[in-house]
Length: 181
Picture 1 (tube, rainbow, N blue to C red):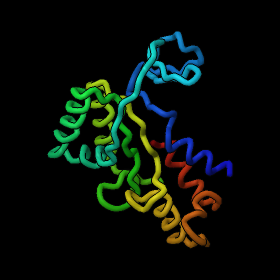
Picture 2 (tube, one colour):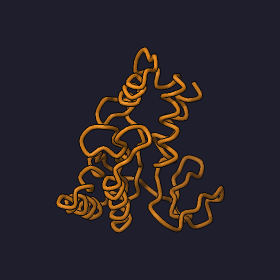
Picture 3 (cartoon, rainbow, N blue to C red):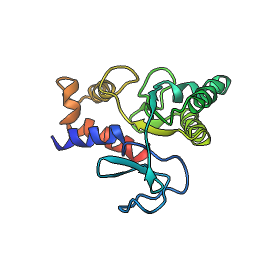
Picture 4 (cartoon, rainbow, N blue to C red):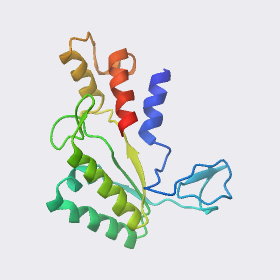
């Protein structure tokens, strides 16, 4: 159960992840910060009430990892900002497969990391906060299914995808990924 909570907690990654630079997490809602915080039942940013209006765009990192399609990411954030959207949930993972961030346990594609950096930079430029998901419960983009597959390929006895939450090798793959991401 503890590892499931760890996975779920890191999926949400502190509700809204502040983009590069000047980030401080504080317990006082009156201090300024680029990080959205909670005060009771309200969100605050830089000591003021903050209202979220967002969208899902799982594809941002993979699209940004190809310089020829980066303009789609810029356009998405421009349009979102113009329409009053200030929050995007996107993937900060892609395990195995097409434009994988994590090619195999502990091995990463630097071009995809550059794509993720570009997403974070563009979001900041257009005033859009990010929720960065670090793993998927479903098969799309890898996720727990891919972690289990990798463990099996390395001779581990893993029954099913739900062993992702209990098998020590699979859990370690995820913990190692969180340290990198």
